[in-house]
Length: 155
Ligand code: HEC
Image 1 (cartoon, rainbow, N blue to C red):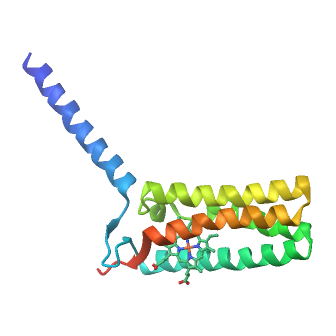
Image 2 (image 1 turned 180 degrees about the horizontal axis):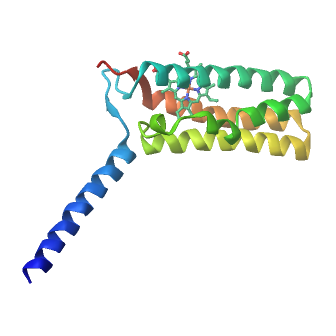
Image 3 (image 1 turned 180 degrees about the vertical axis):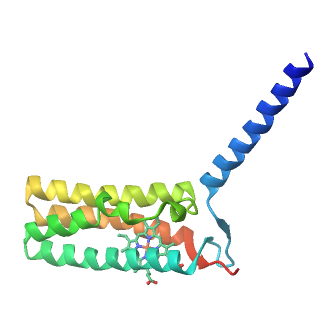
């Protein structure tokens, strides 16, 4: 009986530890920011990695627009693919754990939308369709920037 109680206590303790880990993974490494957004705390290198990725996204967005307006669909496909899920492999796991789960979902959704732009461009070869899809994709850029910032950890 005593042993049984002990193992139940152990189960409860383990469950709490698992729940804490899951919670930590879900919320990420965040704190409120005085501009009303949520600050995601990262090391200097992690922040630089993500900001570089962001600048690539901006550049690719411009390249897709330019190519679509010139009806250069092959370039649209190539650049949209480079902004899609394929690029995600570059992000290290340790950094990944610091991002809140909603942010990761928004990031994946954005990559998915770029893959969709590439797939549809291949299928329809229609520049104005690409522009409409990119415009809709950019609502994700706006939504995420309105909600989060990247702040360097002091320590
Ligand atoms: C999942 C969230 C998320 C999405 C989606 C997202 N961004 Fe960002 N981006 C951020 C955060 C957070 C920052 C840092 C903002 C800050 O600290 O004020 C940032 C910063 C940037 C910067 C500044 C880079 C620098 O060097 O300072 C650019 C440019 C940028 N994003 C472009 C884009 C574009 C273009 C898209 C859409 C194709 C996009 N982002 C989608 C989260 C996101």
